[in-house]
Length: 159
Image (tube, rainbow, N blue to C red; front, side, top):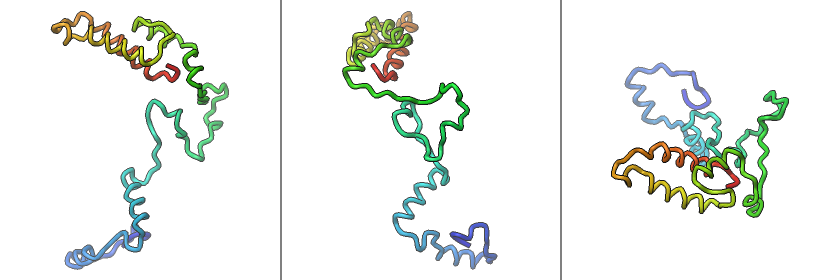
């Protein structure tokens, strides 16, 4: 029967169904803005959505009604405490064990910045890639380790 009367139906013959459908407009009486909002929400089935990705902590991704104390985290292990560092602090920040290991894979020490890491990564990939070595795949494992180390360092905030 239409909006606000979902689940209620007319019983028409086929000719009257065609006539009714030709004149029916679900959005009749709605503003252009309300129609746009409805159509945008229809893309996800009118359900709430949340942002996804590796950097969820940087954005406010909790809903208004979420209460972190309801999660049953008595030790506070799953709380997100994001510390903002200035540029000076981030350069002097201590690296974790995994970041130091990744830097070691690239042959670098902990005093480098992201530009040096990226340059070293590009140099190593160019040297070790099978296409640059006439198809020789003997360095393939080392190349995988370097790619894994670089991707880890990219994901670490204080690098």
